[in-house]
Length: 85
Image (tube, rainbow, N blue to C red; front, side, top):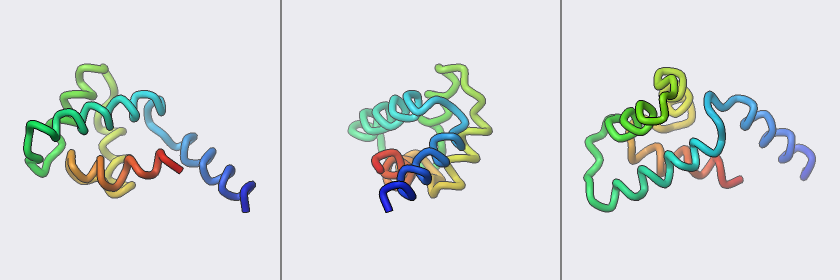
């Protein structure tokens, strides 16, 4: 079972459209912004972060949506937990 879990984690990490560290920074950024900004139910904060980091936003947004993140708050609620496995 442990080997299976390790394999799944490796497959997930290989599917990432940007470095894992940048995803962790994105989650921290969204978490910080969510303390003072209500979710607009879009990707405005995520897009700003990706633009600041000069990352291909369309690939990352497609990945986020495929993993349950359809707006900034859902990125935190649904996608971040996949990085905690």
